[in-house]
Amino acid sequence: MSAPLLAIVGPTASGKSHLAVELALRFGGEVLNCDSLQMYRWFDLGTAKTPLVERRGVPHHFLDILNPDEQFAAGEYMRRGREVLRDVAARGRLPIVAGGTGFYLRALIDGLAPSPSRDEQLRARLQSRADSRSPGYLHRLLDRLDPATAATIHENDTPKLIRAIEVCLLARRPASALFREGRDALEGFSVLKLGLDPPREALNARIHQRTAEWFAAGPNADPPLIAETRSILARGYASTLPPFQSHGYRQSVDYIEGRLELPEALYHAQTRTRQYAKRQMTWFRKETGVHWLRGFEIG
Image (cartoon, rainbow, N blue to C red; front, side, top):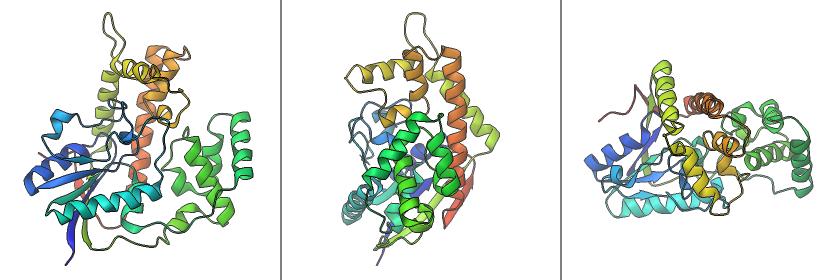
């Protein structure tokens, strides 16, 4: 007999985390985070990580498990995430997967197809071109090779872009097509996928409001997200690390390092976050078996 498994998907700011907690409280569940950035310690505000008090005693897995200079590949997420799912189910609890990293969710449920090994010479060439070309070069290249995968990767996430391009070139086919041949699909679970689909204008308004709060300067203090970014940098981590390239943090770094004024940082953060939400919906619309709920989280 299959154990129930609930997956909650949707764009950023749609309320996935809130809904996950509510359903966990109602049905005796535990939450497995499926947001790649929320795995990083100290990246709290800009990732919309659920504060401890708002988790209301619901166990959350895969939050704050990485330092900013560490990585967590999709294959490792699949392997370790399945261990969590089986442990939660074995204790008679409902596993609830919630987050906006669609590639991780698909790896967790559908499995991963074998992919080409790393080619260090090719990777070095791609890195050299990225360094010498205009910003966004790698993302534009990937978009020509594999638009579906490009839609899921931020244009500043160089390691993921290089790996995706590497797979496309070595496999001589889009990485997304290779991935659809996923093997080792999750067994022993009956999966229900719920998708949150708020109206676009309402979602954008929520994104704008949330981002404005991140960059709202006090009379004698940095805006909250900039203060958080400074505190992480003060731990000795380089501002070029992948988590700092995500929306909000990238603009905070640019402000701290003098490349943007505060209004510009806010504008670009809002724009990038809207674009990210659109890419997420593009991905999740192609996810099979999602039951879409019109609107934001329900209480």
